[in-house]
Length: 265
Image (cartoon, rainbow, N blue to C red; front, side, top):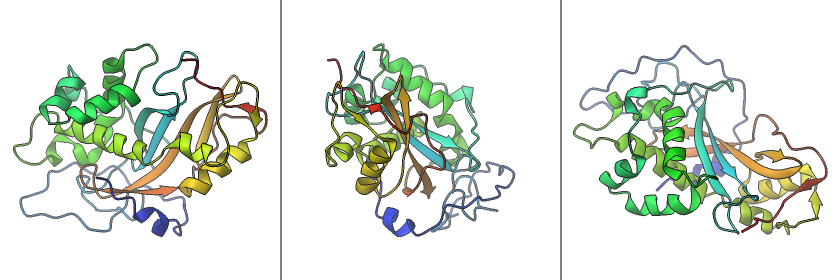
C-alpha cells in the first residue's frame, strides 16, 4: 500500500529547478546496506545509490484517459494511461532495457501473485482497441524499464522473474486509485454532458480543491481527453511514498469552451 500522508506535508516545499547530476552507476547494494530514510527524487540526491532513489527519472507522471468515442472503462471512471518517470528537467528516457521486455505481462503478474491486480487492470487499464496486453507491454517496456529502483541489480535476492514489472504495475494502480478524477470533478458539479462547456480554470480548480495540487489537462478537438498528475518519489518503487506537486507546465486544453463529453457506451 502506498503511503500518501506525505502529500500535504510536502505541499509547503516549493517546486524549484534542481540541477540534476550525471546519472549514477546502478551498483547493487551490498548485504546489510540501507537506503537513506528521507531521500526524495529530484531533491538532494547527489551521491545516493540509484537503487535507493529514482534517477534520472525522478519526476513521475500519473496519466489518465477519458476515452469517450469509442469509450473504454466504466462510464463513471477515467482509465489508466501510465506511470511515466520523466527526468527532473522534463526530458525523459525510454525503452531502457529491452532484455526485460517480458513476453506476457499477464503471466508476470500471475506468477507474482497479482491476480487481483490483473483483474483490476482488465477494467481500468484498457486499450481503446481492446489490446490490453499489448498496451501494458508498451507501458512497461517504454517507461517501467527506466525506473532505477527496480533495476535487476536492485531486486531482492531470490525474487521471482518479473517482480520488477509487478511492482511497477502495482504502484501505477495504487496511484490511480488515489486519484479518482471523475469524483474530483463531480464534487464540483462538473459531470459529462453533450453540450455544456467549461473553462480550464474551473476544471483545474476543481481538481486542486480535491487533490491539493494542479494537474495538466489535455484535450482532443476541444474535449477533455487526458490528465497528468505530478509526483516525486520518496524511497523506491517497491516501498516508497509519492510526494505530489503542481504540474510544471500546462497541457493542451484551451482556456475556454472545453467539453467533458459522456462516454458513448
